[in-house]
Length: 570
Image (cartoon, rainbow, N blue to C red; front, side, top):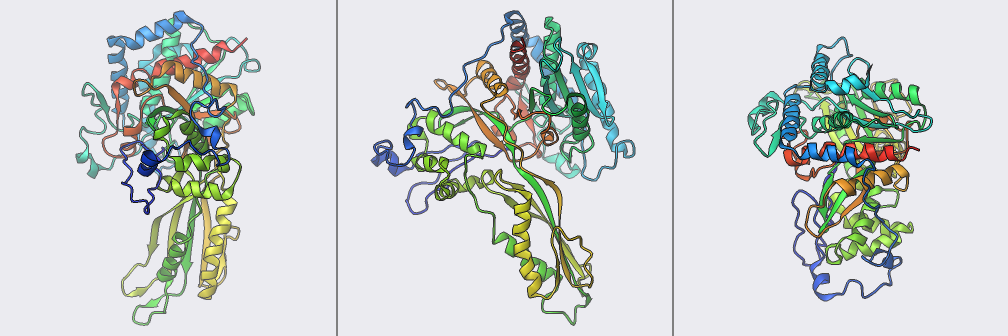
């Protein structure tokens, strides 16, 4: 999930530090605000494109899109606005939170590890609370616990590609020793009149309930779709997706083929947020790549009374220092959806609220001026995780006894790949750092393409795990994105009076089950129709929650999206 972006303060300017709270709020440099008319000079290449109100074609907004079937839309709005309905959907979310559907990194295969059995309870709960839905959809199972609900439309998929909405049933585990730190027990689903508390409230049971609720409302309204609607609920998104996410994708790919889906929706980043004194709906159109790198150092052991100058732990430490001392460079290019977000901020935010330092660099950066792209990343240094391949040393192991020279030491490093970076580039970079260290210490070296079968005891080996290239960037000029944008602007409201709601592309730094669905469509969009800025600080940790007044209106958004997509079927 995404974090806020705040430009780095210029230490030499003497200006006060940037103010940040939850979302990123970027104030104009004080000396610019006081002494300079930010638009008096347009000498920077392309700067004229980034002046608010200048008729720029950048970040043009789709008009609000309202469903043609006003009777169905009115039925849904009246339900969503009723106190009885709101009580019912809040109770449904509270109830499903009470099911501790935790997924663990060390889970065995489905059918052999009893910890998967909790997902039978999840399926049963959904069926009990949505009987109307299950009377009208076809239910298929992918590897037992992957649920696929298909509401067949009157038009065949060859004429109207289906719309697919994803959610996951599993949640991140809660450690027993941390339960005491929760305001309310994590699996109580407590509702205090304003907030629904509990593990999964935000990630991702609120989303799951909202999309199945939208089908329930549409069916009860009497609506009959022309375009097939598919809901798919995974069981292991938080650990890998291999047990449910991939089988679901395989099932749908076999049925619909390459590019057989019109639009895929999945959970997003911060949803609706206010940045640069402007309300934005951020739609993640791509995800960063992923790679875990393992490095092992092996040598002869012995008694600690007669140690070598550098044992395996020391050599491994040298490797870690080399890696951390040579990070991947940050660069902001038009390929990154966050570039589009910055463009939207430049042309739609109040002029005094968007930093001129960023505005001046956007033009040349858009023309692939590498120097400007690098300077732009430096200006946004505090949020470099959006623009840089990040690396984090997560595990180190070595040694078994204080008076014994260790024979092996190893580390695991987690990388999140920038959209401009490939797995191959990462491997070349790491090998170039580690190989000289092996040579320095007279050790054999095995890179990523060389399985660690080197002879001899003194060696350094590298391997990659869970390699995933950055996701393809979904098009923002395509019809499905325009339908989504128009729906957002019609249903959701800006966060401040006087604002308009600007829909903008965004980047998902983390990975979702959509990584298995790339072949099914180019149109994959990750968006949660609420303000998640505060919630994101609680996802995967203590006191996860969702605001009830926002949650109860999510089904209206998803139902409207289904209706609007259906209106385009001839």
